[in-house]
Structure formats: structure tokens, C-alpha cells
Image 1 (cartoon, one colour):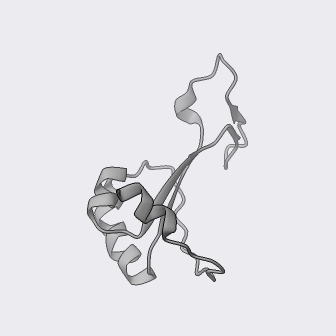
Image 2 (spheres, rainbow, N blue to C red; image 1 turned 90 degrees about the vertical axis):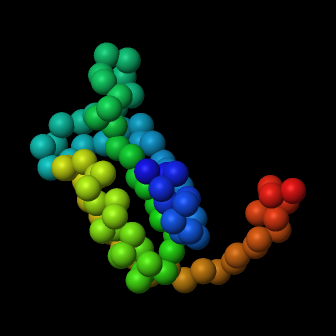
Image 3 (cartoon, rainbow, N blue to C red; image 1 turned 30 degrees about the horizontal axis):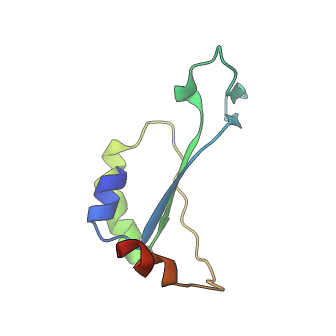
Length: 90
């Protein structure tokens, strides 16, 4: 999915892997060695204007698991620097 988001021109994406969680069933999932790691939470944070994000959601929605939560938030950007991004491309 991250490759698709990259090719789509989205401003930015970060994927976070959780170490412990519980949901509606109240069953606690954690990184204990005996538990399967596929039950741990994953958060995919997409940085994009809301109109573009909503149209992209229609494309990626079929790839999402049946048990997932999608939220959209407006944020106030306090600082943005592109210095590191140009350094990475060189």
C-alpha cells in the first residue's frame, strides 16, 4: 500500500507498528513471544489535503482489513522544513 501512496503523489505517509492494543472485544494484544504478531495494531498516517485524501481512500479501501478505523483530522502546521528532503534526493 505504501508504494501505491507514494506513486499517487501524496504529500507524506508514515506507518507505525503498535506494541500493544485492545479493541471492541477487550482482548489485549501485545508483543509477547507466544502471540502472533499479525494481531498488533498498525497506524498509517497520510499527510494530504482532505479532498485528495478522500478520493485516494476510495482506491485503497478495498485493500484495508475488515476490522479497521479510518479518521480524518484537520491540523495546524506550526513548522515545515524541506531542507532534509532536498538533501535526501542528492
